[in-house]
Length: 231
Image (tube, rainbow, N blue to C red; front, side, top):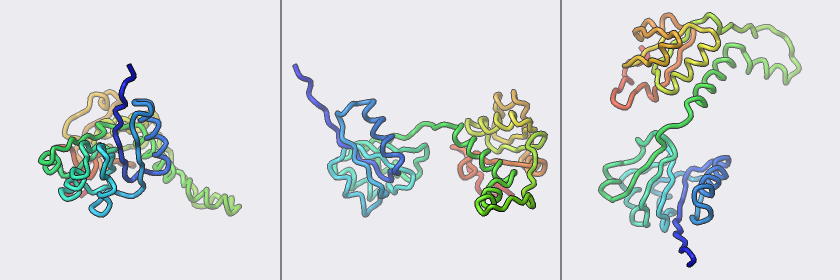
């Protein structure tokens, strides 16, 4: 007996050009061609919400607006599930979603290495004057004036927030041979094993040659430090 297809219409908002084939490939791996995916570059808001009519699943991004009014429109259009393509969800009115019977999901975590490696790529670009050197090279200017860099080895780096991203950042710093200072509400055994010393925030900034904050908006899920975090 032939199995019935259980087609679900899915619509994704704020989809980047590079992201589109990745989303389609992930859907195909998981479900084959059973479900239909529609990708839009525009962001979801009160003006664009009607475009989701007839779609049971909405894939949102952090740049979308999912307030009570938008969620009501999505629900009226047949949406059952909001799947946020990010770890953050402060752009979603969870109370309204619950009242409307909408299920909300998000990415539980993403690669901490991508963030940590990119942070060090920027640090190296600054420390070694790479951007300035690249601009000069394009102009066939090979002078070394103003391109003097500094070694990372032996320097001190301060890490504010030693969770997954902070730990990955610290591991790279340890590989450079740097002294590690850390600050968090709880000490991370993995960072301690790298030789990190946990110190007060004021001392961390005073002694660090480089510093990085791995908290989004200087916060943890339960504690806000935005006022005066960097003072």
